[in-house]
Image (cartoon, rainbow, N blue to C red):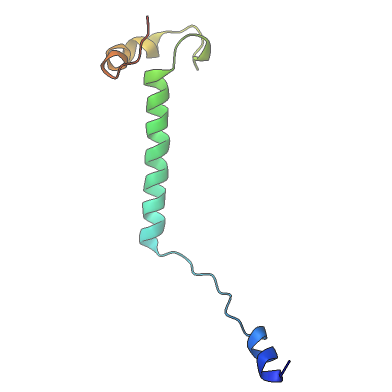
Length: 76
């Protein structure tokens, strides 16, 4: 191996680019929106009975009752 080939192997560019502010902001908005959507989906679709966060309390179920039927979730 020649010294020029050895030198080119040692000087390979391995820098990592940091994303710009727009990319980071977009990723944060997407993450927050996804978490809020999943939380709303849980409360509208699954918060009742054995999987309820609030136990036997049915206030959340009654609050979103019509939305459950509108979205096609059976609840009784």
